Length: 257
Image 1: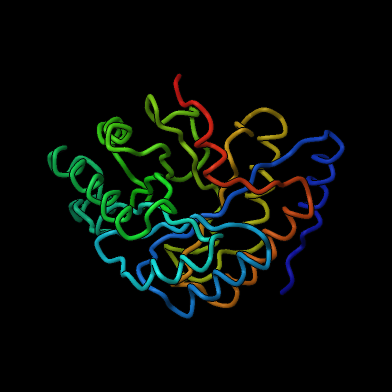
Image 2: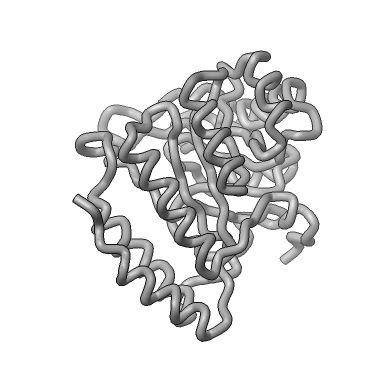
Protein backbone atom coordinates (compact mmCIF):
# COMPACT_ATOMS: atom_id res chain seq x y z
CA UNK A 1 0.00 0.00 0.00
CA UNK A 2 1.28 3.45 -0.92
CA UNK A 3 1.73 5.60 2.19
CA UNK A 4 0.29 9.08 2.52
CA UNK A 5 3.20 11.54 2.36
CA UNK A 6 0.96 14.62 2.26
CA UNK A 7 1.30 15.41 6.02
CA UNK A 8 5.07 15.51 5.57
CA UNK A 9 4.69 17.76 2.53
CA UNK A 10 2.59 20.13 4.64
CA UNK A 11 5.28 20.28 7.32
CA UNK A 12 8.01 20.89 4.73
CA UNK A 13 6.00 23.82 3.35
CA UNK A 14 6.05 25.40 6.81
CA UNK A 15 9.84 25.00 6.91
CA UNK A 16 10.16 26.79 3.58
CA UNK A 17 7.79 29.57 4.64
CA UNK A 18 9.84 30.13 7.80
CA UNK A 19 13.11 29.95 5.83
CA UNK A 20 14.39 27.07 7.94
CA UNK A 21 17.07 24.57 6.93
CA UNK A 22 17.45 20.98 8.11
CA UNK A 23 21.03 19.69 8.36
CA UNK A 24 20.78 16.07 7.19
CA UNK A 25 23.16 13.13 7.47
CA UNK A 26 23.19 9.39 6.82
CA UNK A 27 24.80 6.71 9.02
CA UNK A 28 24.90 3.05 8.09
CA UNK A 29 26.17 0.42 10.55
CA UNK A 30 27.99 -2.93 10.67
CA UNK A 31 30.21 -2.88 7.58
CA UNK A 32 33.09 -5.37 7.49
CA UNK A 33 33.68 -6.31 3.85
CA UNK A 34 32.48 -5.64 0.29
CA UNK A 35 29.07 -7.18 -0.43
CA UNK A 36 26.28 -6.83 -2.95
CA UNK A 37 24.36 -4.84 -0.34
CA UNK A 38 27.31 -2.47 0.09
CA UNK A 39 27.37 -1.91 -3.66
CA UNK A 40 23.68 -0.97 -3.53
CA UNK A 41 24.40 1.43 -0.67
CA UNK A 42 27.26 3.05 -2.58
CA UNK A 43 25.11 3.41 -5.69
CA UNK A 44 22.23 5.03 -3.80
CA UNK A 45 24.57 7.39 -1.97
CA UNK A 46 26.14 8.51 -5.24
CA UNK A 47 22.81 8.85 -7.01
CA UNK A 48 21.27 10.98 -4.26
CA UNK A 49 24.42 12.96 -3.51
CA UNK A 50 24.29 12.06 0.18
CA UNK A 51 27.52 10.72 1.70
CA UNK A 52 27.24 7.76 4.06
CA UNK A 53 29.09 7.69 7.37
CA UNK A 54 29.79 3.96 7.33
CA UNK A 55 30.23 2.48 10.81
CA UNK A 56 32.88 -0.23 10.38
CA UNK A 57 33.46 -2.99 12.95
CA UNK A 58 37.26 -2.81 13.49
CA UNK A 59 37.94 -6.36 14.67
CA UNK A 60 36.32 -7.84 11.55
CA UNK A 61 37.09 -5.20 8.92
CA UNK A 62 38.87 -6.49 5.83
CA UNK A 63 41.52 -4.90 3.65
CA UNK A 64 39.15 -5.52 0.76
CA UNK A 65 36.67 -3.11 2.37
CA UNK A 66 39.32 -0.40 2.58
CA UNK A 67 40.20 -0.96 -1.09
CA UNK A 68 36.55 -0.76 -2.11
CA UNK A 69 35.80 2.41 -0.14
CA UNK A 70 38.87 4.14 -1.56
CA UNK A 71 37.01 4.21 -4.88
CA UNK A 72 33.94 5.88 -3.30
CA UNK A 73 34.81 9.17 -1.55
CA UNK A 74 31.16 9.53 -0.53
CA UNK A 75 31.55 6.58 1.82
CA UNK A 76 33.09 7.93 5.04
CA UNK A 77 34.36 5.20 7.41
CA UNK A 78 33.84 5.71 11.15
CA UNK A 79 34.55 3.47 14.15
CA UNK A 80 31.83 1.01 15.24
CA UNK A 81 33.05 -0.16 18.63
CA UNK A 82 35.60 -2.96 18.48
CA UNK A 83 34.11 -6.42 17.78
CA UNK A 84 30.36 -5.70 18.12
CA UNK A 85 30.43 -8.17 21.01
CA UNK A 86 27.80 -8.17 23.73
CA UNK A 87 29.22 -8.06 27.29
CA UNK A 88 25.92 -7.49 29.09
CA UNK A 89 24.20 -10.24 31.08
CA UNK A 90 21.08 -11.84 29.65
CA UNK A 91 18.91 -9.73 31.94
CA UNK A 92 20.10 -6.47 30.33
CA UNK A 93 20.03 -4.97 26.86
CA UNK A 94 22.98 -5.78 24.63
CA UNK A 95 26.03 -3.52 24.95
CA UNK A 96 29.74 -3.56 24.24
CA UNK A 97 30.73 -0.31 25.94
CA UNK A 98 28.78 -0.17 29.15
CA UNK A 99 30.03 -0.85 32.69
CA UNK A 100 30.11 -4.64 32.38
CA UNK A 101 33.91 -4.70 32.22
CA UNK A 102 36.70 -2.66 33.80
CA UNK A 103 37.05 0.80 32.31
CA UNK A 104 40.59 0.00 31.18
CA UNK A 105 39.28 -2.83 29.01
CA UNK A 106 36.58 -0.76 27.35
CA UNK A 107 38.85 2.22 26.68
CA UNK A 108 41.51 -0.10 25.28
CA UNK A 109 38.97 -1.52 22.84
CA UNK A 110 37.90 1.98 21.80
CA UNK A 111 41.53 2.97 21.24
CA UNK A 112 42.31 -0.23 19.35
CA UNK A 113 39.31 0.36 17.11
CA UNK A 114 40.51 3.82 16.13
CA UNK A 115 44.11 2.73 15.67
CA UNK A 116 43.21 -0.31 13.58
CA UNK A 117 40.88 1.55 11.25
CA UNK A 118 43.38 4.38 10.83
CA UNK A 119 45.83 1.75 9.62
CA UNK A 120 43.25 0.38 7.19
CA UNK A 121 41.69 3.61 5.91
CA UNK A 122 44.32 6.27 6.56
CA UNK A 123 43.15 9.89 6.49
CA UNK A 124 39.73 8.99 5.06
CA UNK A 125 38.71 7.63 8.48
CA UNK A 126 36.61 10.13 10.43
CA UNK A 127 37.20 10.14 14.23
CA UNK A 128 33.61 9.34 15.14
CA UNK A 129 32.78 6.64 17.70
CA UNK A 130 29.58 4.67 17.19
CA UNK A 131 29.00 2.23 20.08
CA UNK A 132 27.24 -0.98 19.05
CA UNK A 133 23.53 -0.96 19.88
CA UNK A 134 23.94 2.82 20.47
CA UNK A 135 24.74 2.17 24.16
CA UNK A 136 27.69 3.54 26.10
CA UNK A 137 28.36 4.52 29.72
CA UNK A 138 29.21 8.11 30.64
CA UNK A 139 32.50 6.98 32.16
CA UNK A 140 33.58 5.61 28.80
CA UNK A 141 32.34 8.71 26.94
CA UNK A 142 34.59 10.93 29.04
CA UNK A 143 37.64 8.94 27.90
CA UNK A 144 36.97 9.24 24.16
CA UNK A 145 38.53 12.67 23.46
CA UNK A 146 41.85 11.61 24.98
CA UNK A 147 41.85 8.58 22.67
CA UNK A 148 41.52 10.80 19.59
CA UNK A 149 37.78 10.88 18.96
CA UNK A 150 36.02 14.11 18.05
CA UNK A 151 32.40 12.92 17.68
CA UNK A 152 30.16 10.43 19.49
CA UNK A 153 27.08 9.13 17.68
CA UNK A 154 24.26 7.18 19.32
CA UNK A 155 20.49 7.51 18.79
CA UNK A 156 17.57 9.86 19.60
CA UNK A 157 17.80 13.67 19.88
CA UNK A 158 20.83 14.79 21.84
CA UNK A 159 20.45 16.52 25.19
CA UNK A 160 23.57 18.65 24.70
CA UNK A 161 25.87 19.55 21.82
CA UNK A 162 28.85 17.97 23.60
CA UNK A 163 28.91 14.41 24.89
CA UNK A 164 31.97 15.37 26.94
CA UNK A 165 34.47 18.25 26.84
CA UNK A 166 36.09 18.12 23.42
CA UNK A 167 33.55 15.64 22.01
CA UNK A 168 30.61 16.55 19.77
CA UNK A 169 27.40 14.54 20.04
CA UNK A 170 25.79 13.87 16.64
CA UNK A 171 23.03 11.26 16.86
CA UNK A 172 20.69 9.41 14.54
CA UNK A 173 16.93 9.87 14.74
CA UNK A 174 15.03 7.78 12.19
CA UNK A 175 15.59 4.00 11.91
CA UNK A 176 13.29 2.25 9.40
CA UNK A 177 13.96 -1.33 10.61
CA UNK A 178 11.56 -3.23 12.87
CA UNK A 179 14.26 -4.77 15.08
CA UNK A 180 11.90 -6.21 17.69
CA UNK A 181 9.39 -7.63 15.23
CA UNK A 182 9.63 -8.66 11.59
CA UNK A 183 13.11 -7.12 11.05
CA UNK A 184 11.59 -5.69 7.90
CA UNK A 185 10.33 -2.15 7.35
CA UNK A 186 8.50 -0.44 10.21
CA UNK A 187 5.02 0.77 9.25
CA UNK A 188 5.59 3.62 6.81
CA UNK A 189 2.72 5.57 8.34
CA UNK A 190 4.48 5.34 11.71
CA UNK A 191 7.83 6.39 10.26
CA UNK A 192 6.30 9.37 8.47
CA UNK A 193 4.49 10.39 11.67
CA UNK A 194 7.72 10.08 13.65
CA UNK A 195 9.62 12.17 11.11
CA UNK A 196 6.93 14.86 11.15
CA UNK A 197 7.06 15.01 14.96
CA UNK A 198 10.84 15.40 14.86
CA UNK A 199 10.55 18.21 12.32
CA UNK A 200 7.81 19.96 14.30
CA UNK A 201 9.90 19.79 17.47
CA UNK A 202 12.83 21.38 15.64
CA UNK A 203 10.69 24.02 13.94
CA UNK A 204 9.08 25.09 17.21
CA UNK A 205 12.31 25.07 19.24
CA UNK A 206 11.47 21.97 21.26
CA UNK A 207 14.50 20.17 19.83
CA UNK A 208 17.97 21.30 18.73
CA UNK A 209 17.91 21.95 14.99
CA UNK A 210 21.64 22.60 14.95
CA UNK A 211 22.13 18.86 15.47
CA UNK A 212 22.29 17.16 12.07
CA UNK A 213 19.19 15.02 11.56
CA UNK A 214 20.35 11.42 11.16
CA UNK A 215 18.91 8.58 9.11
CA UNK A 216 20.21 5.24 10.42
CA UNK A 217 20.36 2.21 8.11
CA UNK A 218 21.94 -1.26 8.15
CA UNK A 219 22.64 -2.24 4.55
CA UNK A 220 23.39 -5.89 5.32
CA UNK A 221 19.82 -6.63 6.43
CA UNK A 222 17.80 -4.46 4.04
CA UNK A 223 14.96 -5.88 2.03
CA UNK A 224 13.54 -4.07 -0.99
CA UNK A 225 10.96 -2.21 1.10
CA UNK A 226 13.69 -0.75 3.33
CA UNK A 227 15.79 0.29 0.35
CA UNK A 228 12.74 1.92 -1.26
CA UNK A 229 11.79 3.84 1.89
CA UNK A 230 15.36 5.00 2.39
CA UNK A 231 15.46 6.45 -1.10
CA UNK A 232 12.02 8.02 -0.76
CA UNK A 233 12.58 9.75 2.56
CA UNK A 234 15.98 11.12 1.57
CA UNK A 235 14.63 12.37 -1.76
CA UNK A 236 11.70 14.14 -0.13
CA UNK A 237 13.87 15.81 2.49
CA UNK A 238 16.42 16.90 -0.11
CA UNK A 239 13.63 18.35 -2.24
CA UNK A 240 12.52 20.29 0.85
CA UNK A 241 14.54 22.18 3.43
CA UNK A 242 17.45 19.76 3.91
CA UNK A 243 21.11 20.41 3.28
CA UNK A 244 23.66 17.62 3.42
CA UNK A 245 25.95 17.51 6.46
CA UNK A 246 29.19 15.57 6.72
CA UNK A 247 31.53 15.19 9.66
CA UNK A 248 34.17 17.36 8.00
CA UNK A 249 31.90 20.34 8.70
CA UNK A 250 31.89 19.70 12.45
CA UNK A 251 35.63 18.95 12.60
CA UNK A 252 36.21 22.57 11.60
CA UNK A 253 34.37 23.75 14.72
CA UNK A 254 35.84 24.14 18.20
CA UNK A 255 34.20 21.71 20.66
CA UNK A 256 35.39 23.64 23.70
CA UNK A 257 32.37 24.23 25.99
